[in-house]
Length: 276
Image (cartoon, rainbow, N blue to C red; front, side):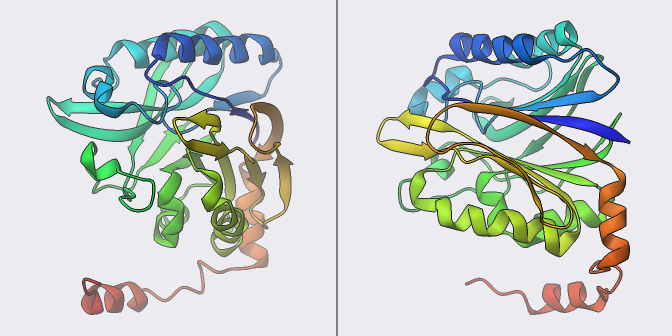
């Protein structure tokens, strides 16, 4: 099955969801294609609210999917007959927040994924606000199984590996990465695709929020690691490309990394795990 991925590398406004939803809506309106292919518009990490919200986050966070921001994303998807992935702060109970990615479509809410690895070093302070997720999600969509992860999660190869083992043909990573981390991401993106024979979609923030300069550079890699799309650095950009659900299986037949993976490795890792 063919489907289209639209990379929407935007510059989100800080603590301004109304402006950001307008940006998201305009991009979907202007780039909707009326044909037989399903399209997934992918926006960056915390794209609905901006990455740096500071203490405003406690007012901006909402339950998913019942909150007004998620409901507005659903309206945009229905209006444009498309699927949409975007990031926002989620509150499950008062004071308990997650950095979340949501997927919605023409028929409503599809699923969400909460960030597992929260950076609390260098310029990052995410553990002040967010709780880590204990679950790796793969979503059942009309385009097949798709995994979602968020930014620093890509530093853990186990997450993309889990997506592949759970049957996903594509892993989507939404991000708000500043330029100091660019070399890491541009190494990990093709590696995660190739080592797991899975399509990999990466969409990053662009522009400046406070003193952070987000490097953009969003891209798509096929399940063999081939670069299919690449956006510019530092500034907002947009592009779309076509993927297939079968490409992952074809790559697995050629390089059977998952088939050759012995289960005892996971048991040994569990038994030998230690706190660094």
